[in-house]
Length: 163
Image (cartoon, rainbow, N blue to C red; front, side, top):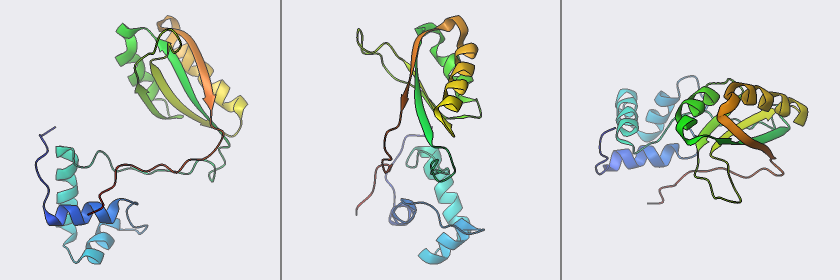
């Protein structure tokens, strides 16, 4: 990744216009460009560059799992051997039922978990079955694990530009 430098007025305009998502249209970049009075090719080029430099971390869908019928959402947490964490994270993150997976520091002695993987299911039994698949995949690379179930919906947003 390149070292991020300053952004210009047009980049800032694009970032502010997309903070709550791209337009829901068949050609979202063209719709965005039209609303900003810009060329669609320039918007796509600028967004690609901002991804490469780290000004934008990612562009992706953020589904509302509850509205899609997934009423059980569990963050599975795993005590994975430090020497195995990178490979284990890649393998677990590649599972089609894991929406995101990441490594976090342990806080011993109370919190031994280092690998986190979000699993969604229609009910808790489905989440537990998926966690069992992760457990089998990790094998002897993992010690304890738990599933922390969501109890309420929180609005998720990233960092926002205000000016």
